[in-house]
Image (cartoon, one colour):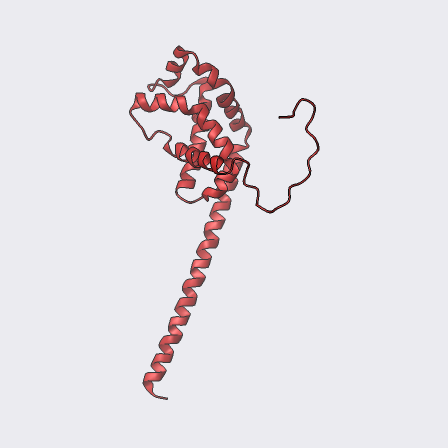
Length: 187
C-alpha cells in the first residue's frame, strides 16, 4: 500500500473521530440544556405555588379590579414617583414573577410549548388584571418596555389559548370517565 493511501485512510479516520466527537458534544449540550430547563421550571413552579405569591395573585385577580374602578385610587396606584406600597406591592410581585418567566421563555431557557401548556391560563388572567396599571405606568414613565417580557409571555399564552381552546390533550388518547358534576354545576 502506498504512502498516499495510508495518509488518505488516516485522514478519513481522523474525520470520523472528529465527527463522532462533535455529535457527542451536541448530544451533551442538549442534555445540559434540558437539565437547565428542569431547574428553571422547578424554581418557577415553586415560586408560583408559594403562599406569598398566591396571596399576591388573589389580590391582583380579585381586589385590584374594584380598586381600579375608582379614578382617584387608579391615579394613586399609577403614581410613578413612588413604589407600590402596602397591598399594592402584590402588583409588583406578580408582574415581576411573570416578567422573569417571560424572559426565560423569550431566551429559550424554558421551552415556550411547556410554558404555555403549564401557565397559559394563569399568565393571561394575571396580565388582564394588571394591564390597566401597566398602561398607566408606561404612559406616566414614558417607558413602553415596562414589563415587556410579561407582555410577551401573555401574548404567547393568549395565542396558545386561541389555538387550543379545549386544552392540549393529546389527540387520539382516551379520556378518563368523570362523575357527574355536583348539583347546580351544570353548564
